[in-house]
Image (tube, rainbow, N blue to C red; front, side, top):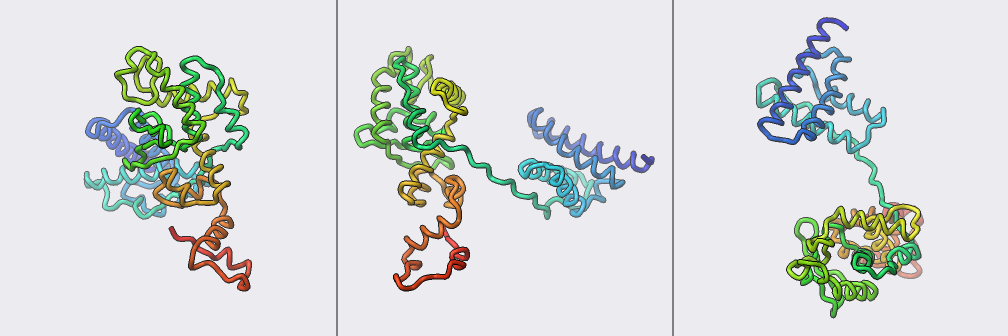
Length: 324
């Protein structure tokens, strides 16, 4: 390695270190976050060493694109690449503020999108078997109510944990939850879930301090149950019920949506029940393919309905666009 390369590396490394100190001392970010920034920017530094660049000012948008392309080719995922790109952008915002750069080369670069991984789904028989918790001790009665409510109404984990007794209307069979963006929605509660909740409410106050707690689900100590506690209990019941893999809240929510969609074919209704602001999220979440969406559109939209004699060529189905 030449002296000029060493100097270039040292200059960039010093800028990165100053930036990390700024994150720690001025912005008061956690050690873990600062470490992530340093690790991502180290990839930039190593790449620039190979190109023998003299200073941060000589790094342009092509340099950043080439770095992203190399890392992507090496197998770095979309989320990791987006995080790295965000780190480089923040780094150059700092350099611009300190007059150590004239522009931000990362602003015009886009990281490749990561493929959306779908959670595993239980079939209807597996779901019915899993939620059928037969033990009658205090925790098991509570856990049966939790699993039935997850599968019956498709709640998110945070929505279930944050639910209060007054949010539940057993008589009318519904529960009011507050989802992402503080959006409130009312969800139906099925027959089995209503019975499980009634059984739970009969014994809920047996724990000390429970009567003074508004939470629908509480822990043994009488406080609101935590997300970790719910996840741990569901994993434990997975073993007891002989499930092939651990069941988690998101899996029950996904199963709820998939089974409801399979039975009704009503994508909009599932979207509302899940609390998705964009129908494309529901489309991916329920692992629908485009062909199914096209059929729903053709069958349901008044502008798409055709006379029985009029048949569209199969190739046209692929060109149909569904707008939310």
